[in-house]
Image (tube, rainbow, N blue to C red; front, side, top):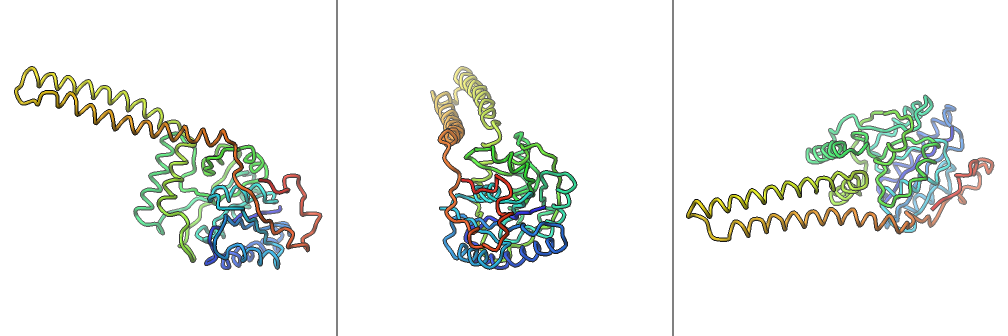
Length: 332
């Protein structure tokens, strides 16, 4: 089997040399033991980095036939970088893994075995979250449970460390949505799947490229891209507020008729005004978010453009294997 390992990179110069060393050692070991074809590859996707990430990739690709680099024309985001690698990788099976070395690459042989046993999709799932802070662990696990409650099919504690067979990749190619959330899309493919558990390590070097703001944006993307539940909740909220408004009105009438403690016009005017005003703004915001996503989808703009491909830097790779499948040709 020809394996491709896709590694999205954004400003990863601090960790990239170590990542190159570990992944090439692992891949060579699998090739030498005849578990993988000699034309397997590691595809590093530079997502518009502003540091020395691309020069490191380019240099490595020029001296090692296992290394291939794709450079996106600009920063498009982690999900788009992963997709670019998946759609342009040439393997019969493709594994996506982050460059920060937190995902245990020693789980890759087990993923390959699960794929050989018939699983077209193999999810890498964390055994535990002991390396996370309490806040990160609480919010992350709460988010997975929230998605499940909203009806989104998702694998608990799985991010973007997974193996996809060629059939799964070709099926994924048909998904053209702009608002990309791969950990929600992949389960939609419906192929036979398996789970491989691993322990997540501390980041080897550098800084996380997913601060709280980006994590929240990705979380909201997952909710609004795969669930209409927020719109249904708005309907329920509207009905609840209407009942509350009727109750407040009856209470204001009771105060006016049977007590002397009411301020004339206050309860019946101010309370419903503020309550309804806040709810309306909230509802308009949620509806606007779905409308914005519809607007972005209808434009059908490309998710990424590939500026450079280092394939030409490795002429010693056997040409008979370079484009063994029609889908090997680079796509945008």
